[in-house]
Image 1 (tube, rainbow, N blue to C red):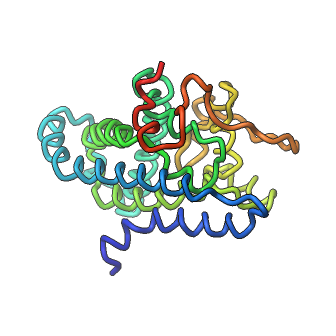
Image 2 (cartoon, rainbow, N blue to C red; image 1 turned 60 degrees about the vertical axis):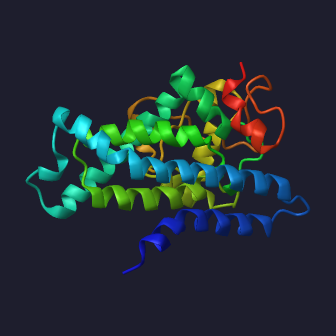
Length: 257
């Protein structure tokens, strides 16, 4: 049985593996060391916030919100494997809406927009989330999971798969077009997620899916990746983005405009 530390490391390890593969094919352009260092520090701060939230907020949240439980998915009288599939889908549906809320609610967008400020979307972009966004995502998600009594084992499994998939969805590695098209009917592929990182509002306000792509089709937020060779322009407006590639500038970005 793999150790918990190894399981937690699978997400960051996936980012590193995809990044190394990308770097081996970026000729002559390489990821600057400063970008790598700054993004890594931001990711470590996010990890610290997440660790603190899990250690100090989880039990109080359970105590507060468990009396308001809407339904107990854990107690549904179906075979275990079906329960795990249902729970996994419900978690991903919740994450779709948590992501969408971070685009819709101004305060949450101020936090989330840091992730969209990266103009060179690749595996390393996975690390670029404001530390406080980890906290808001944790709070909203955990409250939803408590209200639906999602089995803890499935939450752990989802977090591992999601963290590994996040690196995949941001990668610049080329995938067979036909294979990616078929995969895109079920999961979020790099081309689908890259549309979400576009500078144009219509594109960035679409494709909110985290692991599965069919939620966007179901809730009319899906935009099909372009089949033309026209390159997408990534990022956000100059007024909303960080003024410099520095840890301080990234951390204070939510206070701009």
